[in-house]
Structures are given as structure tokens and as C-alpha cells.
Length: 577
Ligand SMILES: Nc1nc2c(c(=O)[nH]1)N[C@H]1C(S)=C(S)[C@@H](COP(=O)(O)O)O[C@H]1N2
Ligand SMILES: [Mo]
Image (tube, rainbow, N blue to C red; front, top):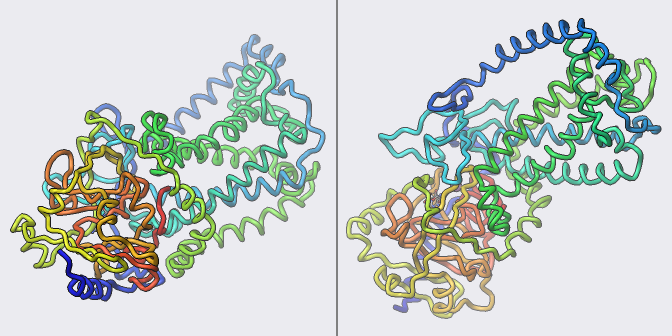
């Protein structure tokens, strides 16, 4: 089996077959744009366009106004409004809108802007939402993409759609890697801002604005709603307290929607999902993604109504409160607000072009802000497994298929002549024939796959633990990483490869799988061998494995980012989240 000379030449040729990658997102080499469809919601067996919300909303609003105005002519309703004018019984806030609150309000909106845009971009990479963890086409309740074609191979990358650059960041099809850096970087800042806000809220009297202290908040909210809808607005006391409707909606936004966004966000990654095993079986990745989207819709609704009310209930006063921190009807707030908005719009419009041009920089900055959190998460040792009955009826196929003659020949011979080469910094370079691998002790695991694009699926995998192979080849002390080379090229040319830490490859669930769901691994899912490494996103699991190499560093491989998609699609090297 030993053949160090041969393995060394293979590795050096594999290393040179890796391609460097550009530091910008080169649109002419990227996936061609593909339009989606107007978002639809499935009701029963029918897809209904969400655009119906607009006429329906207008009609309902007009009806509601008519009803509210009529109601206000009834004495009982008038008495009700007199009794519950809208004011809550909370004690008034004495500090108005202090600087910290105004600053945090600004940062919150600034961060949210990018979080929302990048979030929509991430959604466009797998433009479907499901309740169940298997992501089976046809079971989604929301989509902005056609039916999955049944007559040809349709990979999950094929399914991604283009959204405009003013909406998403960077507005390029399948740019989930870059969108995630924006999303996570600003998420972290938003969470920090939010935590500081919680603390300051409760160490001052400001909490009295947003936390109801009496049941009377409900009749007061109803009364305020009637007053708004009848277009005779309630008397404002915003400087000192919020009315019932404000209090309820702010409370929901601050104490329900925001934490829910966080929880359903992290539950979409393998690290938290595997760690919080039982919880993840209830709040599976797709349900989490769905709720994350519902929370987004709430935020958008809140921002929309909130902004409209700021404008129509006394713009100058409202801006003076929240921007200038003064309680008068001067022009100060507006004079600060306008230039700030202009700057925001410029930043808004520049975000996508800058991201396209300086993609590598965005990757680096993102990595340096949130990279260490991802590396902590890699140390968790969850090992969540599922049961046979949890196996998904459908498992998306992803990636660029191998097309080389060498691979074709091996495949035609059912891999009898296949040899897995393992070399590099090992005492014992070796080649393992397909039959030899199958003769080794087999490990089976039923696990959930998390593709970076958003779909998931449970499958049973059978194969050789990587730790067993490592024990046989004996990594040298200076070896730190394990490189997996594929027979297949990546989308941008050059061999697909990925790098893992040795520690992670000794993990009990890291295996070289040659079986899926009890059958020989199929061509599309990576025959003859594919990596399973359950604490990472799917792209780290190289399919159609050709050779394995142990190295001290990976900076000299490809563009030096630790894998093909890290090089070419600006993904992170560690991806447990
Ligand atoms: N060689 C190679 N391996 C690859 C890919 C690829 O493009 N080439 N795609 C990755 C991605 S993004 C995912 S999600 C999984 C998909 O595995 P599946 O097709 O079995 O679902 O394979 C990974 N392994
Ligand atoms: Mo993926």
C-alpha cells in the first residue's frame, strides 16, 4: 500500500491544479443572473401572489376607517374612549429622550438596514420557506421561484435567484457568502447595541415607556387604534409616555421580535442546532428560517407604520424628540434628520458596488469581527443524531459535477480501480483501494445536513471514520490541517477542495462516506467517497474525493482561504454557524 513517491507527485500536481481567485466578485465569470417570480404564498394547493396584500390592505384600511368613524358616533364608544383615552397608567418618564436613547435608536436603524438587506439576499439563495426540516420541493409555503423542474438535474445553486442591488447586498445571484458577512457583522453590533439598550432601559425610567404595567394597556390600545383609524388622532404625550398601542407594539418589537430573531437566527446553523439537540428537533432549521422570516415581516411592518406615523402625527415635534432630544416645535430635529438621511441613502446605494469590488476585504473584515465566535462554536461537541424515521424523503443535490475522463473511467468500472491517496505531512503515506476502505470498520450516522444556501435534510451516512485513517497514516507533529481534493472542478474552474483542522477530522462524526441511506453513495451525492463533518455547513464536505493531504498551512493552496468556496465565493473557513 505504501507508495510515498507516487502520492507526493499526485499531491503536488493537485496543489498546482488549484486556481487562484480574484479579490473582487467578477460578474462576467459569475453565475448568470436568473429572475425569480413575484413572491407567493401557498394556501391549500394554490399559490397566491403576495402582491394581493396591496389592494387587500387598501380595501381593509378604508373599511376599517369607515367602521371606526361610524363607531365613534355611538355613545358607548365615546364613553369607552373617554374612560380609556389611550394613556397607560404607567408613571410618566421624566428624562424625555436622552442622548443614549437617541444614539441607540440611530444605531439600531442603521444596523437593521444592512441586516435586513443582507437577510433578503441570503433568502434569495434558496428562495423557498418550509415548516419541516427536509426542504422537499412542493412542501414550501412561501417561494419566489418556479416549481423545481422534474425533467433534469436542478441543483440548489440552480435554484438561486437574482435580486436588485439596491435591495439585497450585493444584489448578485448566489452571493450568500458575502451577504452573510454583512448580516453577521451587523447582527453582532445590533445584539451589543440591544443589550446595552436593555440595561440602560431598566437602570433609568425609560422602561416605563415600553413595558405595560397594567391590564388597562389593552383597552387603551383598542381605544388608540379606534382614534387613529377614525382619523381623529389621540392627544400625544410622547415626550413623557406612550399610548397603549405604542406601548404594546414597542414591547412586542423589543422584547419578543428581537430575541426571536436572534434565537431563530442561530438555530439555523449546525453548531447551535446540534448543541441544543432536543430543542432543534422542535425548532428545526426550516421552521427557524420560517419564523426568522415572519419576524422580518413584523419588523418591516413596524418600520413602515412607525415611519408613517412619525410623519403624519407632527413631524417636527416627533423629530425633535428622537433626533434632537428637545420638546418643542423648532426645526432642529428636521435639520439634523435630512442630512443624516441623505448620508444613509448614499451608504445604502454604495454598499452593493463596494461589496462586489472589494469582496475579499468584506470577507476579511467579516472574519475578523465574527470569526472567533465561529471558532468557539467549532469546539462544541454535540453529535446530534436522528432516527431512521427522520430520514428526509428528499435531499437536494448541490455543486459542480466531475467531468474528467479519469473519473468517468473509474465510475464505469464501479470504482474497483479507485484508490484514495493520503499523503503530505504523514509518517505513512498510503493508498486505499475502494474495497479496502469498505473492509474497514464501518460507522453509520443519521444526521442533518445544513447547506449554506438555506436548505436542510436528514440522511443516514455510512463510511470509514477519518480518525481511523489518520491513525493509520500517522500525521507528523507539524501537520495541522487536512486537505480534501475532489475529482470535480469548482464552478469557476480549478479543483474543488476544502481544508479542515485535524482536531475536527478526529471528531466522532467525521467520516468518509461511501453509503447514503443504506445504499451505495450515488454519483450525484459524491461517489465513491464524500466527507461528512457534522459541525460544519455543507460546502465543507467535499464530494467525489480523490486525495487527502496533511499540511502545516493552507495559505499556499488556491487563493489561500482554506477551500474552494472560501477562495471563490468568499465563504468563511470555519462554518459551524
Ligand atoms: N466536489 C464538490 N463537493 C461539494 C460541492 C461541490 O460543488 N463540489 N458542493 C458542496 C455543497 S455547497 C453542499 S451543500 C454539499 C451538497 O451535498 P449533496 O449534493 O449530497 O446534497 O456538497 C458539498 N461538496
Ligand atoms: Mo451548500
